[in-house]
Length: 485
Image (tube, rainbow, N blue to C red):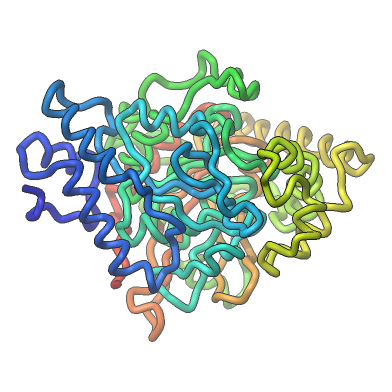
């Protein structure tokens, strides 16, 4: 049983259909994924640790299925979990040697919800250390590589999740996002990524970077699986007060929004200031024009927006991420067990147990504070930006704003990510969805090209509306292609 099931590009629905017909068990599925990780991850370096209880848990889920059927909408679905999210039977390292061996006592709130839906954690995956930037390199596991072009990064900071899901190492992935970090690897790895409205998904049990901007969300191969995963992890957590904003505003189902005519009569604004103007941006811009043509064919009204936003300036002059880092991370580190290697950001710097690629950022963060005048100025600027963007939606009666997540293809290994546009969703806390938007031209190192992602930004708690558009676009284009491993 299970030997004839093909795990490449498998979906939750396909897995459940095979289980219902007796062609697949959760255990055989888990075994095939583990075998695939062991066969291919030496080239990608995406997995930190396969869950030592994965096969045991899968067998238990099979027993439950024999007795009473599916335990939930994600029954038996293997999850790749970014390693800054707690799972109580595995270490949480944030990709850092400084946290090596730290095993939390409890699951993160979102992990509890995944398990309640029937899913299980197959593996912990790599990230840019402490999630502080976007190349997915850390002192514990090193550099993760893009499965479509091994000379390039997979985006980040959730690049281990992106590379692993793209390479079919699991069915559902979980990432976190402070500026770009769910949507960047989704764009770079031909995946669907959802950064939910701030407050829709709990950060409880997640190593913090900036609690003003941090959130978690799914990274999957299809819009349907991403919607299923979002449905599973969304909801109020008594220990994360910001999730109270989702009370009465969370949809009871996100799957109900997935319609082939979901883009019909939608009004979508094109944010031209988030497009590049140089020759290096030409391939992405050409793909973006194709997206707009598809939207029009699907019955959407596409309107040009003259409003100017500078994503680079928003990162450097408005975003609170580095100003939050010391105070918010220190709160987490101070509460680690007595035997932990570090208990503060200063302790991390003194230990030397971190990747050199994060040094500039963490040294800068060590000099900053949430109590400064500069922080207050940025906080006001964030609120002004939220008002400006919601007014943009109101003035033009928009359902979504569209732009490339990244103005140029994801950078080669050794370079710093540039030209990413995720900051608008991150600073406002508005939801956004990235879907596969095609590929650049093939090259010697990228045999089918480098993936490019289309980003849709929406109003707070209108994930359903974004998913309507994303699903219609996905089904009309079918841009997603697996890498040639």
